[in-house]
Image 1 (cartoon, protein in one colour):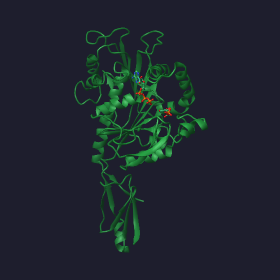
Image 2: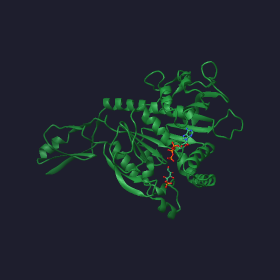
Image 3: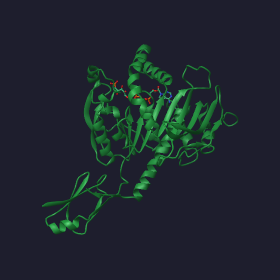
Length: 405
Ligand SMILES: Nc1ncnc2c1ncn2[C@@H]1O[C@H](COP(=O)(O)OP(=O)(O)OP(=O)(O)O)[C@@H](O)[C@H]1O
Ligand SMILES: O=C(CO)[C@H](O)[C@H](O)COP(=O)(O)O
């Protein structure tokens, strides 16, 4: 039997249909359709085949980058809640799995691509932030496979034992979120992302959060927390922080400017930096798109105790990109009054009036619910839902065509 023509497509799956002028035998794999025939004449005619694949079943891939302890899990809980349904570890799987699965989304933690376990890193004298401790080839291959509709056996990094556990099966979801230290580090992985977010927590705030969690919940000493932050800092600066230049949205968390010389780190100034010109994403704005605005909403409709609340909005530049920046400094006294602020924001991709406020009230017990971290994480969650719906709608309209190899 003579192989006559090989066709390649971005992804071939069960939705592909093949039309040929003659009856030929078809062989499929993930990338190629092979047309072959016993007869040379038929084979030649078969080479005019058209292969069309519907791509509306393809997985949308979102990247979320941040250092450890910077609110990725909290953000993920807010995001999956926007899509409805609870996110849970794979049923019957490894109890130390880092994966969370809900009806629409699967969140995988990129720590699972550590190529060196805890002992290996110690022996080699590298941190988990160092690219040499991570397998980017495998990360790329597996994220690409999932995006193309193919299930993978993903490794598990066990944070309890510090070892690499046997892999777990990850089936392609509607939305795959890859969260961790390096979702935008490797260009091949970065190119697979439909949208990317960077949580940029300033050193002062990171320190305050770490103390709160690692001292209260994990029994670490103040000295050991300080030492761990200091030990990670050079690699954080070299490998993690630079990824923010590639992010479509950055949530930057800074100490307040409303309290002079504040060093408590309880009141926060939070910026939502949104890149202009990103497909399927239109930045949120306050009052008037493109204007520069400063707004103190405290008064008759919003209760504010000291130090109050201040919003700002306007265009800016970020790593050479045009961006819109929405900023909130201060914290809410009464979360139900957030509706007043919500009603002055536009392009927030809600499905009904008050959806942001409803989401915030639903998760009032999550860290950051009374300030800009919770508000902007919720809004980014709604924007991702909107982006997903737009991508699906556009794919349904434009089926992908295969090309001759
Ligand atoms: N918006 C916030 N406001 C105040 N504290 C916060 C906020 N987000 C997170 N924290 C603090 O940081 C801790 C870590 O948050 P979270 O578990 O969401 O981070 P993470 O990036 O997933 O951490 P890790 O990667 O180490 O698992 C929380 O327990 C909380 O103490
Ligand atoms: O940065 C980290 C997670 O984002 C961790 O430090 C890294 O994954 C190593 O984990 P462990 O300390 O449990 O060995």
